[in-house]
Length: 171
Length: 121
View 1 (tube, rainbow over the protein chains, first blue to last red):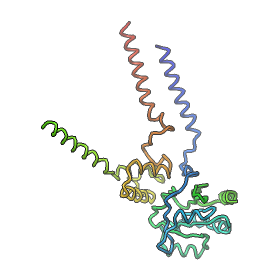
View 2: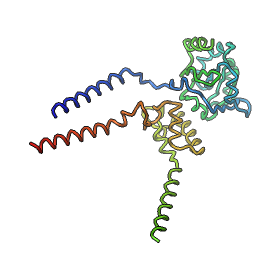
View 3: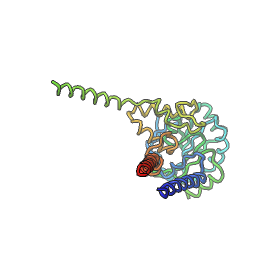
View 4: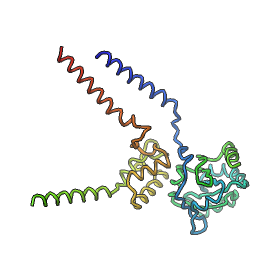
C-alpha cells in the first residue's frame, strides 16, 4: 500500500514538473497565427464607393491578394503605407484595402495625401467583416493565394522584414 | 385515462424542452467570450471597440439561427480557442477535462484501500 502511495505521489510530482516544463517555454503573447493555412470563406466586402460587394470569386482571380485593414485615424497605418505603395508595383500581387470603421471623407483625404496603393478598395463600416479575417486591431494584413488560403498574417504595421517575406512568397 | 395524462405531460415536457433549446442567450455568449484586447475581461464586461464588434457579429449569428456551440466554434476558428473561456473538449485538452475525474477515482481507491486495511488490522 505504501508503495502505491509513493508511486502516486511521484506521478503527480512528475506531472506538475512536466506541465511547468512545457508551459514555461511557451510564448504567451496572443496572436492569430492559427488562421495561417486555413481558407477564408463567405467574403462579402462592400465597395468603398458603390453599393456592390467583393466576393470570393473576385479574389480567386488574383494569384495573390494582400488584404489590408486600415483607417485614417490609425497612426501605424501611416507608417506601413510606403511599404504598401512599394508592394503595389508587384505584378503578381493585388492589394485589397479595407477601410475599417472610418469616415469616408477622412479616408479619401488619407489616400489623396499619402497615395493609393490599392487595386481594390472596400469598406467595413461596422467592423463586422473583420471578424471573418480574425482581425482584433488595425493595421492587419492577410496574404491569400488564389484558393483563398491564408499564407501569412501580419498583425500591426508591415515591416521591411514582412515586405521581404511577401516578395519571397509571391515570387 | 392515466395513459393519456402521461402522454399529455410528456408532450408538454418535450415541447418545453425543445423550445428552451432554441432560445440562445446572447449575454451568456458574451460572458463566455474573451475580450482579446482587454485585461482579463469578457466581451460582455468590456466596452472596447473589439468587444462591440464581436457583440454585433454574435447578434447577427443568433439572428441567423446559429446555436451557441456553432458561434463558439466560429469564433475559435477565427481567433483560436483562447477566445472561449470555457474550452471545448478535444484531443489536445482531454487531460484538462478528465484529470479531475481520474484523480477522484484514484483518491477514492486509495481511501477505500486504506479503510479496508485499517479494518483488517
